[in-house]
Length: 443
Image (tube, rainbow, N blue to C red; front, side, top):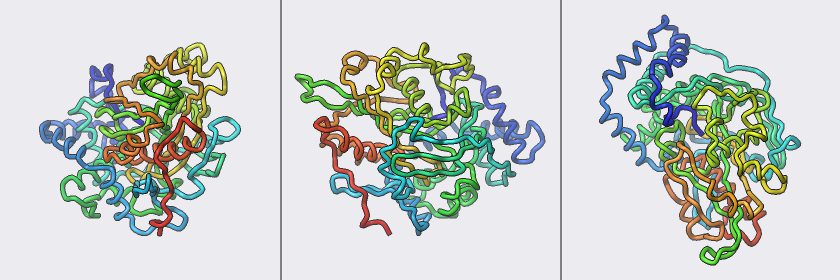
């Protein structure tokens, strides 16, 4: 999931040009005269010490996923009726996350197709309020850091959730659109604020989190998505069927896990499933609202090397970038037969980190001919610092993987929900840790 990132092409972009839309947005929202934001960001950038900035990144990386989850659960305290933090026991070991969910939002087994996925664009944009001093200061700091580190801020749209209806086998919901920069300079600041507090004082005290107090002060503000900017995305555990091998052993699934690059906006330096994407339009705003469309596009970009569908690069010239004639060779092969590829939504939740909505999914390439034909084509793009492969028959290593503290909370949510569903449908190809919803810890 990314929208502010530094690609190889973006490294040469002039910050003043790349950030122009962000400066304009900030001037308008803060009630400043034009060009004030640019001047404030320039002044702030001049005062930045790059050594301190890089040290802060290193301190953030040392804050574990579980520490973030515990801090947020303590911050928000009692839950709203019907909403629970996602807690499971993985081979008996309790794991808590920052994902707030409902019983009806889990184990969906929902095929992502036109019959079962009914997300609707209603055309409503997030109301434009005025930034107070705290919000404006946070936005200036974010932009100054982006300029200092050469991070490119893109001018695009994201979908915002206005209402959701989720049940077993079915997704429905209403979405509008919002400027990405509005997300990046408001609620997305909450993650950095929280992790900085945990890295310096070791806890999430309310007086250390003024931005959180402004944007997501309590659980009601988290779940009432129609009254705030609720952006989000889709991410999926990808499982590729492989034939038996003399060295590897029996037929299995190759499970793909990425180590996120430091150049991405969300979950930088963390483990995540792949693909992982912001929910955003590429060409046709109404058509692209589909979660299936998002995941297929990200497979092309993040696994099969389709640079033209990378929306961070800008300049989208193709009228139909996902037209069958433009697909990569591996994706074209998958699309030729409907039974070669299974794409499901396994769960839905709201992430306390920044209030994002998260559609967790499972992508299964069922035809084991794919691996010998196209396994060599699978390569992560610039958003990843590394790509790992695990066997679905290796219970020991996948169990250790699930306990790794470097996961993002949303990534672990998708991994564990993927384990649960794959255990149901994978047959003899699967020997994964047993993942059970923890009912005893729920209050």
